[in-house]
Image (cartoon, rainbow, N blue to C red; front, side):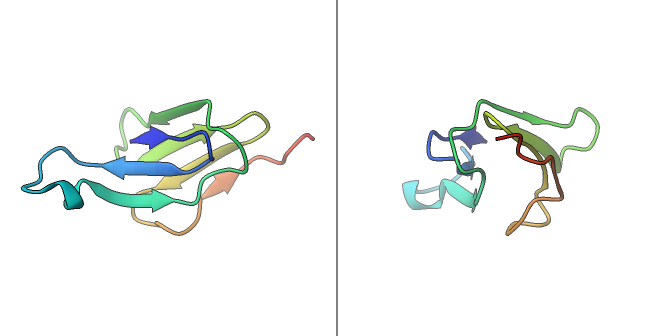
Length: 74
């Protein structure tokens, strides 16, 4: 899983037979670059992403939107 400078979160896999199947999901992410991205240590399907102003909690089971977000302090 990778956070990009454009604010998207890309989930990839290394165990594929061809190159076109490596990217599994692209989450919409944030409005700016993602500074941190980390999985929950006990619930592997949950992960956290942080940009300059907000924190978001995501689930792999909900691919189109986040579960929780803090308010932007801008």
